[in-house]
Image 1 (cartoon, helix red, strand yellow):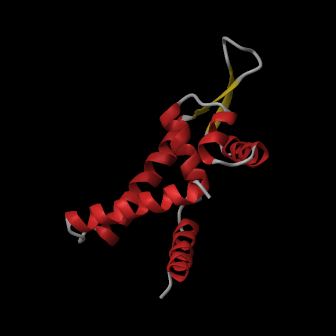
Image 2 (cartoon, rainbow, N blue to C red):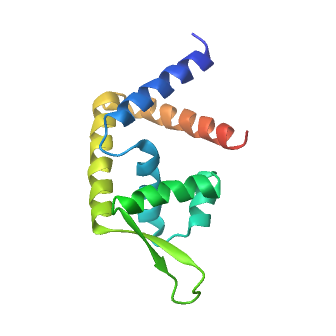
Image 3 (cartoon, rainbow, N blue to C red):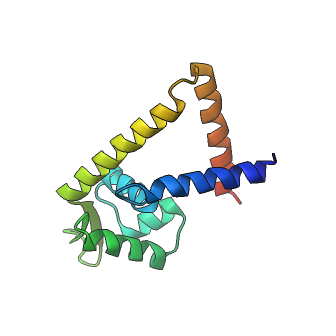
Amino acid sequence: MSIETKLLRLNRYLNMTAQNAEISAARFDVLRIIQEKNPVTLRQLCDIQGVSMPTMSKLVDELQKDNLVIRAQSKDDGRQRWIVPTQKGLQIFAEAALASKEKWEKKLGDLSKEQQQTLLESLDLLLERLSTS
């Protein structure tokens, strides 16, 4: 089986599992960044995710509509808006992160330490190549 076929199968699997989650993979990843960087600007989110301003703005609008984040005005610069997680956003993120961790531990937990390290290194290489294309 070719690398392309395997990547397509992996993508299909990841999309199926994301559909079964309470929160989409895209929303989960953005919430993760917001929670880690707290606070963060829309521009910073765009730069980190490598997406356009309209795409990220729409996603943040959806998160705000669901009360998972708020946009707060900067005290230093009235033109700047910070995006910060709400308590609900932090809770949803924590629950989704735990579910994701449990799912991956169940699927990959029986790999040896060496196999896990090889997998991590391969994923790092793949992500590096994808980000430079």
